[in-house]
Image (cartoon, rainbow, N blue to C red):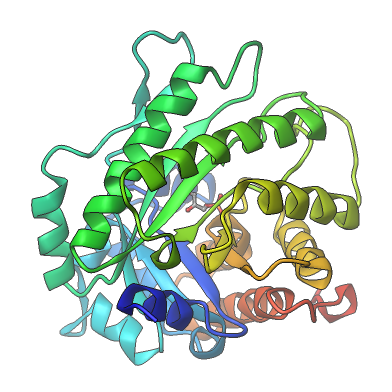
Length: 335
Ligand code: 13P
Protein backbone atom coordinates (compact mmCIF):
# COMPACT_ATOMS: atom_id res chain seq x y z
CA UNK A 1 0.00 0.00 0.00
CA UNK A 2 1.42 3.42 -0.92
CA UNK A 3 1.84 6.15 1.67
CA UNK A 4 -0.86 8.25 0.03
CA UNK A 5 -3.27 5.33 0.05
CA UNK A 6 -2.58 4.74 3.77
CA UNK A 7 -3.35 8.39 4.40
CA UNK A 8 -6.69 8.07 2.57
CA UNK A 9 -7.51 5.01 4.66
CA UNK A 10 -6.64 6.92 7.84
CA UNK A 11 -8.85 9.89 6.92
CA UNK A 12 -11.69 7.55 5.95
CA UNK A 13 -11.32 4.96 8.68
CA UNK A 14 -14.62 3.23 9.55
CA UNK A 15 -17.29 5.64 10.78
CA UNK A 16 -15.30 8.72 9.79
CA UNK A 17 -15.79 11.41 7.18
CA UNK A 18 -14.50 14.89 6.47
CA UNK A 19 -15.58 18.25 7.87
CA UNK A 20 -15.38 20.94 5.17
CA UNK A 21 -14.61 24.11 7.15
CA UNK A 22 -12.79 25.80 4.28
CA UNK A 23 -15.25 28.54 3.46
CA UNK A 24 -13.33 31.48 2.04
CA UNK A 25 -13.60 34.69 4.06
CA UNK A 26 -16.20 35.91 1.54
CA UNK A 27 -18.38 32.80 1.89
CA UNK A 28 -17.96 32.68 5.68
CA UNK A 29 -18.99 36.33 5.86
CA UNK A 30 -22.20 35.47 3.99
CA UNK A 31 -22.89 32.58 6.39
CA UNK A 32 -22.27 34.81 9.42
CA UNK A 33 -24.30 37.71 7.95
CA UNK A 34 -27.23 35.29 7.57
CA UNK A 35 -27.22 34.70 11.34
CA UNK A 36 -26.39 38.32 12.24
CA UNK A 37 -22.90 37.72 13.57
CA UNK A 38 -20.06 40.08 12.68
CA UNK A 39 -17.56 38.34 10.40
CA UNK A 40 -14.37 39.25 12.29
CA UNK A 41 -11.26 37.12 12.28
CA UNK A 42 -11.87 36.48 15.97
CA UNK A 43 -15.45 35.29 15.47
CA UNK A 44 -14.52 33.03 12.57
CA UNK A 45 -11.85 31.40 14.75
CA UNK A 46 -14.13 31.18 17.76
CA UNK A 47 -16.83 29.27 15.89
CA UNK A 48 -14.40 26.96 14.13
CA UNK A 49 -12.41 26.24 17.30
CA UNK A 50 -15.67 25.32 19.03
CA UNK A 51 -16.39 22.75 16.33
CA UNK A 52 -12.84 21.39 16.17
CA UNK A 53 -12.72 20.65 19.91
CA UNK A 54 -16.07 18.82 20.04
CA UNK A 55 -15.98 15.29 21.45
CA UNK A 56 -17.44 13.54 18.40
CA UNK A 57 -14.56 14.82 16.29
CA UNK A 58 -12.60 11.92 17.77
CA UNK A 59 -14.89 9.22 16.39
CA UNK A 60 -16.64 10.83 13.41
CA UNK A 61 -14.19 13.14 11.65
CA UNK A 62 -10.99 11.86 10.04
CA UNK A 63 -10.02 15.05 8.25
CA UNK A 64 -10.84 18.76 8.31
CA UNK A 65 -10.47 21.00 5.28
CA UNK A 66 -9.24 24.42 6.39
CA UNK A 67 -9.07 27.78 4.69
CA UNK A 68 -5.73 29.57 4.44
CA UNK A 69 -6.66 31.96 7.27
CA UNK A 70 -7.47 29.12 9.69
CA UNK A 71 -4.46 26.90 9.06
CA UNK A 72 -2.25 29.79 10.22
CA UNK A 73 -4.28 30.59 13.35
CA UNK A 74 -3.59 29.64 16.96
CA UNK A 75 -5.90 29.24 19.93
CA UNK A 76 -4.36 29.72 23.38
CA UNK A 77 -0.92 29.32 21.86
CA UNK A 78 -1.68 26.05 20.05
CA UNK A 79 -1.84 25.93 16.26
CA UNK A 80 -5.11 24.83 14.67
CA UNK A 81 -3.45 21.89 12.84
CA UNK A 82 -2.04 20.67 16.19
CA UNK A 83 -5.47 20.95 17.82
CA UNK A 84 -7.00 18.90 14.99
CA UNK A 85 -4.33 16.22 15.35
CA UNK A 86 -5.06 16.02 19.06
CA UNK A 87 -8.70 15.34 18.22
CA UNK A 88 -7.74 12.57 15.80
CA UNK A 89 -8.13 14.47 12.51
CA UNK A 90 -5.77 15.00 9.62
CA UNK A 91 -5.49 18.71 8.71
CA UNK A 92 -6.33 19.59 5.10
CA UNK A 93 -6.32 22.79 3.09
CA UNK A 94 -8.31 24.28 0.22
CA UNK A 95 -5.72 25.30 -2.38
CA UNK A 96 -7.74 26.64 -5.29
CA UNK A 97 -8.21 30.39 -5.48
CA UNK A 98 -11.83 30.25 -6.54
CA UNK A 99 -14.08 29.84 -9.57
CA UNK A 100 -13.80 32.70 -12.07
CA UNK A 101 -15.76 33.45 -15.26
CA UNK A 102 -14.67 31.11 -18.05
CA UNK A 103 -13.62 33.06 -21.14
CA UNK A 104 -15.52 31.76 -24.15
CA UNK A 105 -18.61 30.85 -22.13
CA UNK A 106 -21.36 33.19 -20.97
CA UNK A 107 -22.26 31.70 -17.63
CA UNK A 108 -19.74 29.06 -16.70
CA UNK A 109 -16.76 28.99 -14.36
CA UNK A 110 -13.17 27.86 -14.36
CA UNK A 111 -11.36 27.27 -11.09
CA UNK A 112 -8.03 29.05 -10.78
CA UNK A 113 -4.96 28.65 -8.58
CA UNK A 114 -2.37 26.65 -10.53
CA UNK A 115 0.19 29.46 -10.82
CA UNK A 116 2.67 29.16 -7.97
CA UNK A 117 0.84 26.15 -6.56
CA UNK A 118 3.96 23.98 -6.21
CA UNK A 119 5.53 26.58 -3.86
CA UNK A 120 2.32 27.15 -1.89
CA UNK A 121 1.98 23.40 -1.34
CA UNK A 122 5.41 23.31 0.32
CA UNK A 123 4.25 25.98 2.77
CA UNK A 124 0.99 24.17 3.54
CA UNK A 125 2.88 20.94 4.17
CA UNK A 126 5.14 22.76 6.64
CA UNK A 127 2.06 24.12 8.38
CA UNK A 128 0.83 20.54 8.90
CA UNK A 129 -1.52 19.91 5.96
CA UNK A 130 -1.55 16.36 4.62
CA UNK A 131 -4.43 16.60 2.18
CA UNK A 132 -5.88 19.31 -0.06
CA UNK A 133 -9.03 20.32 -1.89
CA UNK A 134 -9.77 21.85 -5.31
CA UNK A 135 -13.35 22.40 -6.42
CA UNK A 136 -14.45 22.64 -10.02
CA UNK A 137 -18.03 23.83 -10.45
CA UNK A 138 -20.48 23.15 -13.28
CA UNK A 139 -24.00 24.40 -13.74
CA UNK A 140 -26.83 22.68 -15.54
CA UNK A 141 -28.75 24.88 -18.00
CA UNK A 142 -29.35 25.12 -21.75
CA UNK A 143 -26.16 23.79 -23.36
CA UNK A 144 -24.36 23.56 -19.98
CA UNK A 145 -22.15 22.12 -18.76
CA UNK A 146 -20.45 22.79 -22.09
CA UNK A 147 -17.59 20.71 -23.43
CA UNK A 148 -15.37 23.72 -22.85
CA UNK A 149 -16.22 23.88 -19.14
CA UNK A 150 -15.95 20.11 -18.75
CA UNK A 151 -12.55 19.92 -20.45
CA UNK A 152 -11.02 23.04 -18.87
CA UNK A 153 -12.00 22.14 -15.32
CA UNK A 154 -10.93 18.51 -15.70
CA UNK A 155 -7.53 19.63 -16.95
CA UNK A 156 -7.07 22.02 -14.01
CA UNK A 157 -8.22 19.39 -11.49
CA UNK A 158 -5.75 16.86 -12.88
CA UNK A 159 -2.80 19.25 -12.92
CA UNK A 160 -3.65 20.21 -9.35
CA UNK A 161 -3.91 16.58 -8.23
CA UNK A 162 -0.58 15.70 -9.81
CA UNK A 163 1.22 18.59 -8.08
CA UNK A 164 -0.36 17.69 -4.74
CA UNK A 165 0.77 14.07 -4.93
CA UNK A 166 4.26 15.25 -5.88
CA UNK A 167 4.27 17.25 -2.64
CA UNK A 168 3.35 14.16 -0.57
CA UNK A 169 -0.28 15.04 0.11
CA UNK A 170 -3.63 13.49 -0.85
CA UNK A 171 -5.70 15.54 -3.30
CA UNK A 172 -9.46 15.72 -2.91
CA UNK A 173 -10.76 16.00 -6.46
CA UNK A 174 -14.07 17.85 -6.31
CA UNK A 175 -16.06 18.27 -9.51
CA UNK A 176 -19.38 19.70 -8.31
CA UNK A 177 -22.38 19.66 -10.61
CA UNK A 178 -24.67 22.18 -8.94
CA UNK A 179 -28.22 21.32 -7.96
CA UNK A 180 -29.60 24.79 -8.85
CA UNK A 181 -32.18 24.64 -11.62
CA UNK A 182 -35.33 22.88 -12.72
CA UNK A 183 -33.64 19.97 -14.47
CA UNK A 184 -34.50 16.32 -13.83
CA UNK A 185 -32.37 13.76 -12.02
CA UNK A 186 -31.76 12.17 -15.44
CA UNK A 187 -30.06 15.37 -16.63
CA UNK A 188 -28.01 15.48 -13.43
CA UNK A 189 -26.99 11.86 -14.02
CA UNK A 190 -25.92 12.56 -17.62
CA UNK A 191 -24.03 15.75 -16.79
CA UNK A 192 -22.28 14.20 -13.79
CA UNK A 193 -21.28 11.17 -15.87
CA UNK A 194 -19.73 13.38 -18.56
CA UNK A 195 -17.92 15.47 -15.95
CA UNK A 196 -16.53 12.44 -14.11
CA UNK A 197 -15.49 10.62 -17.29
CA UNK A 198 -13.47 13.64 -18.44
CA UNK A 199 -11.93 14.16 -14.99
CA UNK A 200 -10.64 10.60 -14.87
CA UNK A 201 -9.40 10.77 -18.47
CA UNK A 202 -7.31 13.81 -17.47
CA UNK A 203 -6.21 12.36 -14.12
CA UNK A 204 -4.87 9.30 -15.91
CA UNK A 205 -3.21 11.44 -18.62
CA UNK A 206 -1.48 13.43 -15.86
CA UNK A 207 -0.24 10.20 -14.22
CA UNK A 208 -2.13 10.74 -10.98
CA UNK A 209 -2.04 7.70 -8.68
CA UNK A 210 -5.76 6.98 -8.39
CA UNK A 211 -5.23 4.92 -5.23
CA UNK A 212 -4.03 8.11 -3.51
CA UNK A 213 -6.94 10.47 -4.18
CA UNK A 214 -10.36 11.09 -2.65
CA UNK A 215 -13.20 11.91 -5.05
CA UNK A 216 -15.71 14.46 -3.80
CA UNK A 217 -18.74 14.43 -6.09
CA UNK A 218 -22.33 15.59 -5.88
CA UNK A 219 -25.09 13.05 -5.39
CA UNK A 220 -27.49 12.52 -8.29
CA UNK A 221 -30.44 14.77 -7.50
CA UNK A 222 -33.18 16.56 -9.41
CA UNK A 223 -32.76 20.34 -9.66
CA UNK A 224 -33.81 22.22 -6.55
CA UNK A 225 -36.50 24.12 -8.52
CA UNK A 226 -37.81 21.10 -10.43
CA UNK A 227 -40.57 20.08 -7.99
CA UNK A 228 -39.49 16.47 -8.56
CA UNK A 229 -39.34 14.54 -5.31
CA UNK A 230 -37.28 11.38 -5.07
CA UNK A 231 -36.87 9.00 -2.17
CA UNK A 232 -33.44 8.50 -0.62
CA UNK A 233 -33.49 5.01 -2.09
CA UNK A 234 -33.98 6.37 -5.63
CA UNK A 235 -31.22 8.96 -5.10
CA UNK A 236 -28.87 6.31 -3.70
CA UNK A 237 -29.47 3.90 -6.59
CA UNK A 238 -28.82 6.56 -9.24
CA UNK A 239 -25.75 7.87 -7.41
CA UNK A 240 -24.22 4.41 -7.04
CA UNK A 241 -24.95 3.58 -10.69
CA UNK A 242 -23.31 6.78 -11.90
CA UNK A 243 -20.19 6.28 -9.77
CA UNK A 244 -19.91 2.61 -10.68
CA UNK A 245 -19.94 3.55 -14.39
CA UNK A 246 -17.50 6.45 -14.23
CA UNK A 247 -15.07 5.97 -11.34
CA UNK A 248 -12.11 3.58 -11.82
CA UNK A 249 -11.98 0.92 -9.14
CA UNK A 250 -8.50 1.93 -7.91
CA UNK A 251 -10.08 5.00 -6.27
CA UNK A 252 -10.34 4.08 -2.56
CA UNK A 253 -12.76 6.65 -1.25
CA UNK A 254 -15.64 8.86 -2.28
CA UNK A 255 -16.86 11.60 0.05
CA UNK A 256 -19.95 13.50 -0.98
CA UNK A 257 -20.49 17.24 -0.73
CA UNK A 258 -23.87 18.29 0.65
CA UNK A 259 -24.39 21.05 -1.93
CA UNK A 260 -27.36 22.74 -0.26
CA UNK A 261 -29.23 19.61 0.90
CA UNK A 262 -30.69 19.81 4.40
CA UNK A 263 -28.76 18.22 7.25
CA UNK A 264 -31.24 15.35 7.56
CA UNK A 265 -31.63 14.94 3.80
CA UNK A 266 -27.88 14.65 3.23
CA UNK A 267 -27.65 12.16 6.10
CA UNK A 268 -30.58 10.01 4.92
CA UNK A 269 -29.21 9.88 1.37
CA UNK A 270 -25.71 8.92 2.50
CA UNK A 271 -27.18 6.22 4.72
CA UNK A 272 -29.07 4.64 1.82
CA UNK A 273 -26.00 4.89 -0.41
CA UNK A 274 -24.12 2.81 2.16
CA UNK A 275 -26.95 0.36 2.69
CA UNK A 276 -27.11 -0.29 -1.06
CA UNK A 277 -23.41 0.14 -1.86
CA UNK A 278 -22.48 -2.63 -4.29
CA UNK A 279 -18.99 -1.24 -4.99
CA UNK A 280 -15.67 -1.45 -3.16
CA UNK A 281 -15.51 2.33 -2.71
CA UNK A 282 -15.65 3.71 0.81
CA UNK A 283 -18.61 6.11 0.63
CA UNK A 284 -18.59 8.83 3.25
CA UNK A 285 -19.20 12.54 3.69
CA UNK A 286 -17.25 15.75 3.25
CA UNK A 287 -19.99 18.10 4.28
CA UNK A 288 -19.81 21.82 4.93
CA UNK A 289 -23.31 23.15 5.43
CA UNK A 290 -24.89 19.78 6.31
CA UNK A 291 -22.56 19.50 9.32
CA UNK A 292 -22.45 23.11 10.44
CA UNK A 293 -25.86 24.66 9.77
CA UNK A 294 -27.64 23.96 13.06
CA UNK A 295 -24.50 24.46 15.14
CA UNK A 296 -24.00 27.87 13.52
CA UNK A 297 -27.62 28.82 14.15
CA UNK A 298 -27.36 27.83 17.82
CA UNK A 299 -23.98 29.52 18.27
CA UNK A 300 -25.15 32.77 16.70
CA UNK A 301 -27.69 33.14 19.51
CA UNK A 302 -25.41 31.81 22.26
CA UNK A 303 -21.96 32.91 21.26
CA UNK A 304 -20.33 32.14 24.63
CA UNK A 305 -22.03 28.75 25.01
CA UNK A 306 -19.28 26.43 23.79
CA UNK A 307 -20.82 23.30 25.32
CA UNK A 308 -24.29 23.95 23.93
CA UNK A 309 -22.90 24.55 20.44
CA UNK A 310 -20.77 21.43 20.68
CA UNK A 311 -23.81 19.41 21.71
CA UNK A 312 -25.60 20.40 18.49
CA UNK A 313 -22.49 19.70 16.40
CA UNK A 314 -21.74 16.39 18.16
CA UNK A 315 -25.22 15.16 17.33
CA UNK A 316 -24.82 16.01 13.63
CA UNK A 317 -21.40 14.36 13.44
CA UNK A 318 -22.77 11.25 15.11
CA UNK A 319 -25.67 11.05 12.64
CA UNK A 320 -23.34 11.43 9.64
CA UNK A 321 -20.94 8.91 11.11
CA UNK A 322 -23.77 6.36 11.43
CA UNK A 323 -24.86 7.13 7.85
CA UNK A 324 -21.33 6.48 6.62
CA UNK A 325 -21.77 2.85 7.66
CA UNK A 326 -25.46 2.56 6.77
CA UNK A 327 -26.53 2.43 10.41
CA UNK A 328 -28.46 5.70 10.69
CA UNK A 329 -32.18 5.80 11.31
CA UNK A 330 -34.60 8.74 11.33
CA UNK A 331 -35.70 7.81 14.87
CA UNK A 332 -32.21 8.77 16.13
CA UNK A 333 -32.65 12.38 15.00
CA UNK A 334 -33.30 15.05 17.62
CA UNK A 335 -36.24 17.35 16.68
P1 13P B 1 -21.23 21.74 1.22
O1 13P B 1 -21.32 20.39 1.89
O2 13P B 1 -21.85 22.84 2.02
O3 13P B 1 -21.71 21.68 -0.21
O4 13P B 1 -19.70 22.12 1.18
C1 13P B 1 -18.79 21.18 0.81
C2 13P B 1 -17.66 21.81 0.10
O5 13P B 1 -16.54 21.68 0.51
C3 13P B 1 -17.95 22.57 -1.12
O6 13P B 1 -16.76 22.85 -1.78
